[in-house]
Image 1: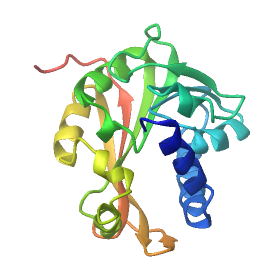
Image 2: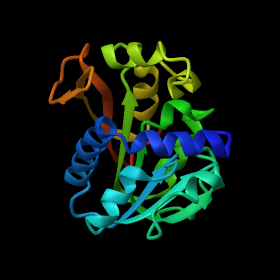
Image 3: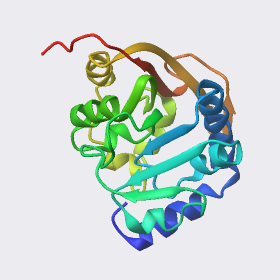
Image 4: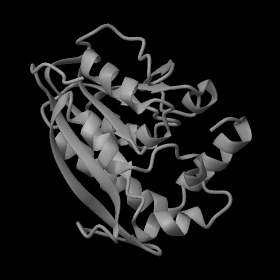
Length: 209
């Protein structure tokens, strides 16, 4: 999101009932898999809509985004930091979890972002990357909209992202969140599921080149 107008339009869209349904499910998913953890870093958080739900559930959330304008729209309780995912201006071993909520594919260099995610995680820390499933009906429909942010996506090869993440994390993967039209429902069907999720735990193994 490059301009104040784009951010304003995005925040307005987020208030629509359809997107509220999506965000509630995504927030519940994250809360379930982050249970027992405290310090969360959300990379590419934008105005931090879903992160607001995590804050309400008692998590301490830091949001990193390249846009100061987007962070200005975030909840007051969020610790907002302006910066790039490839650099993550934090000390090593600072967080219990790092999450990418449909943001990793928009980062210029996801390889550097994943490497930094591992570095800022504490031992046994968790990484969750919600990737947009580019083969889903939902993604293909969104691409037809010339106004859609989907046109800014940089990385559509899910397997390449997964392989890179596996260098740093013990991974579990799953398709999640069926979307057809205005309907939002449980589904692990690759054609229906809007998301492909990588859930990882930081490991001590050496990274292969």
